[in-house]
Image (cartoon, rainbow, N blue to C red):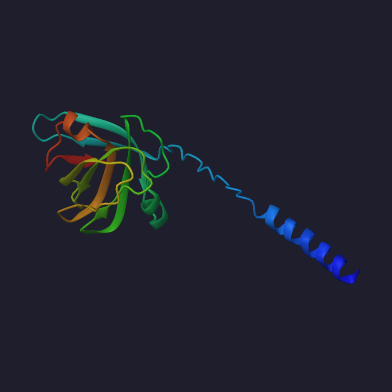
Amino acid sequence: MRFKSFFLLFCLTSLMVLTSCKNDKKVIKQTEVSFKKEGELTIFKSIDSTKITLDIEIADTEFDRETGLMYRHSMPNNQGMLFVFEDEGPRYFYMKNTEIPLDLIYVGTNKKIVSFQKNAKPFDESSLPSNAPAKYVLEVNAGLADIWNLRVGDSLSF
C-alpha cells in the first residue's frame, strides 16, 4: 500500500512538472521610441548656397549614442539624429536593431561634412566607417543626401 501511495504521488508530481514546462513562448514587444525635438540643424550647401533645415534629436550621452535610432519604425524627412562626440576621430556605426534605411553624414569639428555612408541597410551589422575623422554624425532617411545633392565640404549649423 505504501508503494502505491508513493507511486501515485510520484506520478502526480511528474505530471505537474511536465505540464508546467509547456512550450510557453513569451513575446516581448519593444516599445517604439518616439522623436523628441531637441534642436534645429541647418545644412548650407557650398555650391549654390541652398539651406536645408531639420528638426533634430541629439545623441550626446553614451547610452543615446549606442541606442541611436534603434526601435523606430519611421522618421519624417524633416527630422534627423545628431550624434555628438567629445573629440574628433574615426567613427564606426552599424544598423543593429535599426529598421529605417539611413544616410550617415560624418562631420568634422569645423562642422563641415567630411564623408558619407549612404543607404545603410536596416538591421545590417556591417561596419559603416567615417573614412575621415569626425566629431559629429547626422543620420537622416536614406536617399536624402543624394536628393539634397550634399557634398563633402558643405557645412552645418545647429
